[in-house]
Length: 387
Image (cartoon, rainbow, N blue to C red):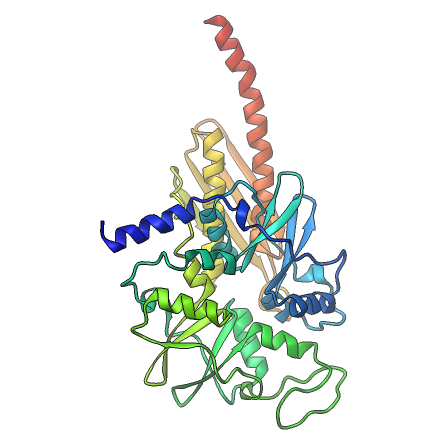
């Protein structure tokens, strides 16, 4: 048996494994948390996101979410909370990896069916992935080529805006095409809560930190790097050994690509089958990552519904964005239409966060499925009695 086949089989085995042995305690925010408390929890625990259980739902605030806050001390956490899917404790690794990829998170909440009992962390799964990757797979096949960058003289507000708009957490810093360092969302949110200016040229007390200084004042000048011919297995080992969240791929000191934890997790994420019915989505967000997550969530909804309503002819979703003055993005209005030969079901929901809107629609569709199942049981019993 070839090494490539053996590697594929070992990854498939891990992908199919139950997540129960990978569950760790939930990094949970206190009730009605302030953003400053959440920031403190992120720094204290060294994590990227914290979770806020709300009954069967689970809110989440990540480092990138905190970047959106206009004032860490006064802004309400509810304004930037997003909601992620909660997986059952009998889910398998491939499902968890797919969830993290869809929501661009580094952890996923897990439930026992009654309450949220913990989380599965990206790093835990990557440690299990180590030693299973095909020997000849180079990191360049997995990494993102020509990554978004800033220069040493770029100001922190520009880096912050790029991280928010492009929904990323790592910005390589260049100096005349050469790699000079790295700035991350976690580094910038630390500045938002720092009572002093952190620029190296002047440090003075301030009630509201000024961010009008170049990224070179606070960037990591020794980011983790590897050459373009590095094997993926070697790059993963580097990432884990240095407790890093990304590795920058260089050639002759010039940046070529970037590989984040999420890129490595794609090796574990299960490939979701296409729905058996045609689906149409109009008005997808311009952001490619948000667009992909939206498509994946809608396809999942349709697949679930098709199990109960096998005569579905098509499913449509129309997304409209309602701009809000002074902001780049306002509320979303989402309409979903499910058409069968005899009837049509239409649902509309609004919200600030697309995944949350689709979760609300999913809840309504689940109620429909339950209703349909109950209505079928009497007919099935009647048919049995007649036979």
